[in-house]
Length: 558
Ligand code: GLN
Image 1 (cartoon, rainbow, N blue to C red):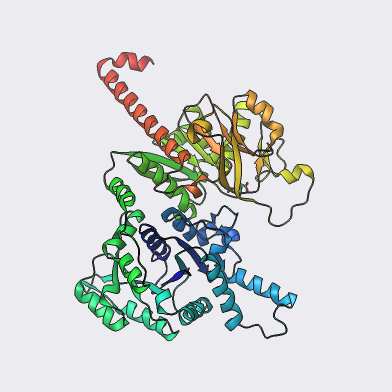
Image 2: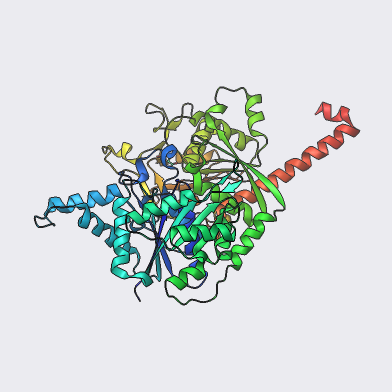
């Protein structure tokens, strides 16, 4: 049977959680035994978000096939089992790039190339491609209704309804119903205007997901239904929740899945959300807290590390812990005396240096890593966090003064991290990143082996620089363990310190593969080690306090 389509649009303001809404609908449909795929269209002109600043765009999510995509694809993967690739995220820029290439090749046989039908046809073809072999394809249109840039996408979904009919297409509109404190009232006007905007381009929404901070009364729902021309049952309260993983349950309570199935004339089994209920139960019943410090550079904008934050939450939930995450601006650790560094870092059960690009803050990261290494604080380095861990080790343990990555110091006497091409004398060309899934072979009897419980894994990459094997010998002699490499041995993928309770770093980004129902082992073990370290530290402090009380002269002598 051909797939049915759900089109998700957004109105009033951005950041209403359209991506989460799409992912949660996908999750609900999967819970009823249906197979789904999800895709996102981004109306901006960049070919992909790969070149955009994390401050502008948030995280760049990487798929197995190495596509640099919108962070909403991260939600899709965390909430469903859909297999995503570059086919699942299109921007206006990439569509036009493709259309212009066709035009130059003469594929349009002399015709005038226009938005309708040529651009809209490409959009529809992209939708149909991801809809193969699934029951339902959920298509999210980025931006807000009324944006000039999103018009061709809106037109394409309007045509899809025209082509496929009501039973095979569904329009879901995510909108805002704000509570106005001065009037002590929920206001429906923004939603009315947003739907009017949609109607003016020929789209009548079927379901309204109303973002609000409180439940919509029957009266409010009736009013919205009347003015927006939808069924009362299709006006859904999409209430704010404490955890994003609660959204599927909120939607289920409001009967979103039942409504979707009814409108799309589909049969499905009863929903089973028991695993999600368990996750949400854990969110509200945590036994203790674990405190992690992330030392990085984009720390003031949390969306830049979306998957990382979620992966840490998954790790914490796996141990029934509440995650207390503190973002530490790496630059703030530079030019401080040791006492101030200690004061800034000593409250953490674990320290993590995440991925990043550029020189700013590197010295601060090295200070944090040295602190973690010397004080035996659990450390987890990801991508840049592995590279900086190697630089720190080279400088402070091996004694290679001035060791660095050639990304930060071209003239360093010791390029422990470098671009492989630099040594081979090959000029840098575009598209030089190592992207997407690579196999990593794990050394037996290492921490990495204990964590993964297997000797071969596949993880996703997004970086240019690598560990320089020329420094392997002195580094290994000084106590660094290379615990993961590509099968041909070219690239180092994981390093660790055997004489430290938990010091591990990887060249890839495991956060992209962590899901609430399948927490990534690198994160869950890091959280466990951090929690245990925190308990030990607390116990030691208590013992010291007791000793201080009973035998202050002995403590003073220590
Ligand atoms: N800047 C480093 C590189 O390009 C690390 C990249 C990352 O952390 N994603 O290799």
